Length: 365
Image (tube, rainbow, N blue to C red; front, side, top):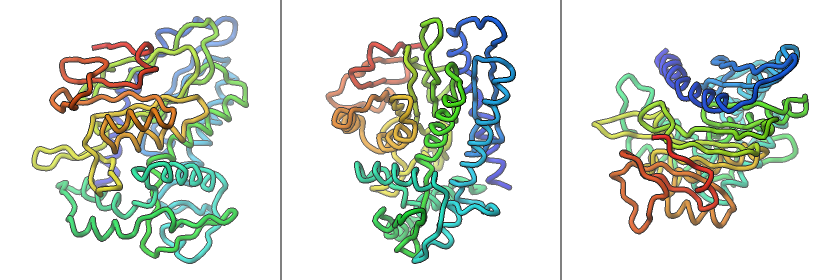
């Protein structure tokens, strides 16, 4: 019950940010003509422990079709990537963590596809690791406890001995683990992967103006018919308004990883839910990082935002340059970064970005 209440509280708190994104995007949208109108709905029962916001400009009949695609996709994929619950007729992450040691488990194709992207991300940088499930479980249990606590150091070290993507074997449509204590966790990519698949299905069904926001994973669907800009806000870490806006005419994906939605405080210190696989402890280099990529790269952007959150901003800028990524970092003003000048500053934050983004960003605070 504690976990359920905590999740519900987080979902309700998240809606304030999502509603702001709707206002920003809707404020620049064109006035539909004929039988079309702009529909805007928020769903809290589609899984992934997050509200899903969906906007579409279309007819009522078309929206009914698009809404069904959205709901079916998120509900189905939530079952596939769920690591806490079993479902009849579905071999999911929970199934693998219970039964995949030295036993090939047949899984749905989306699981294979998502895993392959995740493994590629892990091979690019060790700070993205889907095999750190045992460590993540320690921190999850500590965060969800009646009185949150920091896990025991020895327990973390023991759990870290059972990590490594080489222990995840994919053969056709089956997966098996070579380590009996390995636990898979796709939390750093599954939501982005699902949002991307949903966007693809909606595009194929004919939707060419709208967006999906899955808890900070934003996918813009098509360009504005009147040629005006999409405007998407990046949330201020300590209050609901956005601190900076990204302005674009082309459809993109924007994925934010931050410490201000899911976290715990112990003895006055904030601990993020994003764990650095290299240390086994929450990353503390920044308040948030947002990756902006092409509209068909939602899963990759999700994985990269998690990766960047787990490295210093200087390293992140170099990583982005080497891997053709665009990103925005928000850092507390008192968390100085030596020999690095912010691109923007507010009273509370320093904001850094990759060079190509600077002209597309504007402060709102």
